Length: 409
Ligand SMILES: *Cc1c(COP(=O)(O)O)cnc(C)c1O
Image 1: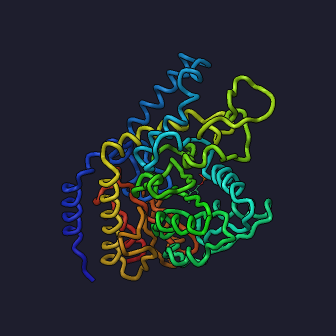
Image 2: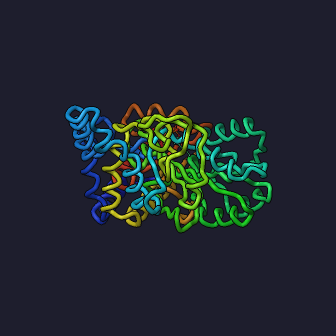
Image 3: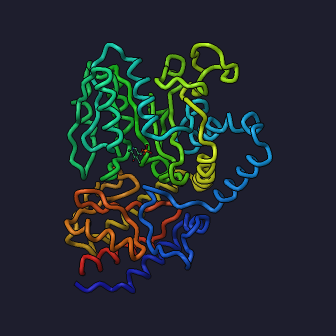
């Protein structure tokens, strides 16, 4: 096979010129930095690049810490998890104010929300989940099932696909207390029909908890209009909050009065500074908070929410679909021996794809050494997660070309 790389480069340049979001790339650190050793960053779904505005926002937060000291809590920090939560809800989650808060890790929030949800269905005995959900989701639910004596009803999925409506319908029954699934599958990128599965769960009298880690910031989400009960997600992936930035939790307004989470800390109590006897949950979403929130960790997220607000979620999704489609086309042209272990139908595909080949375990460190950064998912998957606001088509081409070279083509 002869491939005209010059022609491919021209085509990538044309796509970048026509891309209405191309200018956003310059708002990120490192994207076009000649001093960076990274020539193709394809792991925006694991750790997004930092925005330049985040540097300024973090510096301002440190200045506020230095100048306001303890007064900062009263003046701003106490409300920040809810303020950023509301912004995230409005711009990214399709959630009215008062239902979203930032804090803890996704793992911890999954535990808190799942336990709280299960307490609302005490007579039911099953949690529905799937075999290819992210490990933490499976482990947390295994622990809760042990703790409460509940049964796990596993949906067995093909790792190159995901949980379809039919499979969900078969698993959900009058015994189901809670359904916990990922909106976008971390491995294949399969985009679940969250609205239809939520309806199906509700028809059976069950509650749903969606994990939005791989969809928030890349795929349109309408939690309120889909009638979702609970949701959690990361902020360090497409929301570029930085390593270990705290996660978000959504509890639908209709559940807030009855919702009780298991880690009753002082920050989730009514009037925390009264330090009174006994736990009385705070009103509203604040009751999801347990201890002192990680203020510095949540600052950078705001910068990306602003960028998404400006760009528009639809434009972000359009670029994301175009990028994954482009990676698929390039894979077919340059890597014909590689299997595409992700949905080919853009309607059912989130923001990343996985390629499958037995050589990828060995190839990945060689790619990293040359500044081409996808990630490896056992047993033999190479996951490519372009970030719609910061990845260019030219960068995607550099990545696939390097993979082809490493496979000896
Ligand atoms: C990334 C990811 C997580 C990560 O959880 P942490 O508590 O932040 O480590 C959880 N679930 C899914 C689906 C993810 O993609």
